Image: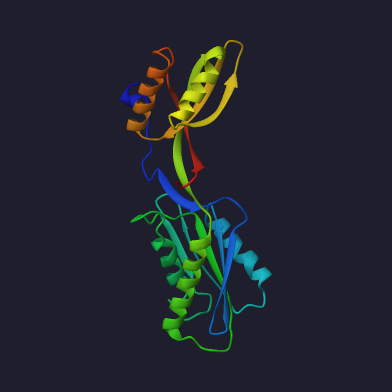
Length: 233
C-alpha cells in the first residue's frame, strides 16, 4: 500500500472521555454545604451550556451552579464559570481538576466533559481557600468514580474476500487484536471492515498481517475515519 494512498489527519488521534450515557453524579458535604457534582459527556459548547441550563431548572433553589468544560481531541476549548462565587474560587479549580485528571500514569487527556457543581449553602463561610479546595475536590471525587472510555480516531478499511473464506479470516483478525467494524455481502464476496489506528505504521502493519493470513490474495482498502469508543485496558 503506497504511503501517499491515504491522507492522514493532524491532531490527537486518541483521548479519554466519559462513557456514553446520561451522565454521572456525586455529592459531598463540606461544613454543612452540599456540593452536588454532575459530569456529562458533551460534544460542543451548546451541549455544555444546555446541561448547565437544565441543572439550573432542576436545582432552582440552589445558590450556585458553577461549571467548567473541556472539549475537543486537543482540548482546545476550555471554559469555566464561578456563578456568583468569589472570582477564581470555583470555575477555575473545577477546570483544573478536569485537566489534571490522570487517565493513565503520567497521562492527562480527559476531554469532551462538562462538570457542574451545584452548591447549597450550609451557613458556614468557607473562605477563598476553602472554596477552591471544595470545588476542586468535588470534581476530582466524581471523576474517581465516573466510568471512562478511550475515544480514538480509527481508519475504516475494507477487505474483500470470497464468502467461504470470510468467517475464518474474520476470526483470525479478531484473534490478532483487530477491531471489526461490520461486514457487507454481495453475490460472490464478503466485505469485512476493520477499524485501524489512523497512522501509517498501523495501516502498513495491518496490510502485512492481512497478506500473511491470505497468502497475498486479499488487499486492505483504506476508507474514511471515524471516532469510536474503545474500552480502557
